[in-house]
Image (cartoon, rainbow over all chains, first blue to last red):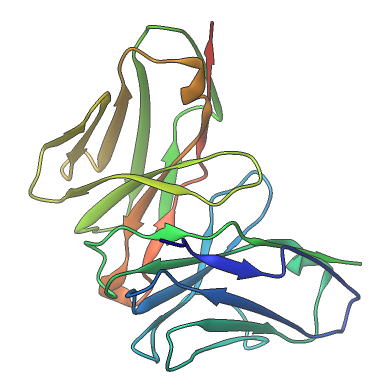
Length: 114
Length: 113
C-alpha cells in the first residue's frame, strides 16, 4: 500500500512569489495535517483538515491557506513568500481527525526562498 | 508560557546500552503523547502513543512512560543498536485547542559501535 506522497520534492522560489504544495494521504485516511519544519527544530503545526473541513489552524499568517479535496488529497498555498518561509513542509495523514490515532508523514517538500 | 523541552540536543551512547530520552512540558494538558523517529531529510515515523491514563507502554525494545503530574514523558530504547541513531521527537496532543499536535525540538541520538 502506498504511503503518503508529496509533490514536488524540492522547490526554489523568489521572494513575493506564490507556491502550491500537494499531498496525497494513505488510502482510507480522511485527515490531513500540514507542518513546517525548520532545520534543527521539530515540526510546527500549520493546518489540519478532516472530511474536507478545517479542523485546526496553527499560528501562521493568513498568507498560508489550505484545502482538502473530495478524494482527501490536500494542497497548501503560501502567498507573498518570505525568506523565512524556507523550510521542509510535511504532510501527515491519519485515519480520523483524532489525536488518539498515529500520523503517517510524507517525505516532505523542501522549499527554498531566495 | 508554553514550552516543550527534550533533553540535550544530542545524546551519545554505547551499543547495547539503554538510551533514555526525556520530554518535559509546561502549560499543556495533553490527553495523548506520541513519539516519532526522524532520519535526516525524511518525514517523522510514528513509534508509540501513550494516553494520559496510561503509565507505561511497550513495543519490542521501546518503552515510554507518561507522568502528567511531573509533566514528563520518558522514552527508552533497550539494547540499543547503531541503526537506532536518529532524531527522536515527542509530540503533545493539542486537539483541545484545535491545533492537532505540538512537537518538541527533538533529541539527536547516536549509538556508537
